[in-house]
Amino acid sequence: MDSRQFNLKSIRPEILSTTINDSMSTDERFQNLVLRPIIKFQNDLFVEVFRNYIKKHKSVFYDLSLEKRMIYIENAIQKDMKLRNSMKGMIIGQFTVEEYLIYIENSSALNKRMMNIVKQRLLSHIQLFEKPGLLEAV
Image (cartoon, rainbow, N blue to C red; front, side, top):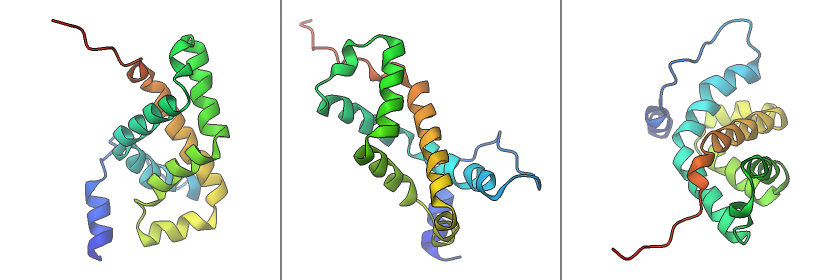
């Protein structure tokens, strides 16, 4: 195993709840063995990227209700191609060459899986997207 492949795989978190069986589709297997660990590994980066996205879009996110914030996150992930492509790049850049070759065989379906997982992660961390407080005098 070359050092890049070994290093990439060694830094990925292990997801103990992942089950792999023979009846899984190739895409589902790829999702569970490759995408989920990479997305979990990149989680803190995705949170910061989304905080920056909120800031660059005039912080309107902070004025929304919880339900509308959830819709905002979904729309941003689904409709903002610049954000979407940036996040896809953060995931694809963590692939080994072998994984990339598998990915390009069905990239459209895998991109959907990828973005759905990222969206779910951001939604589950929605409390991290509160308006930054001003420093108070002590």
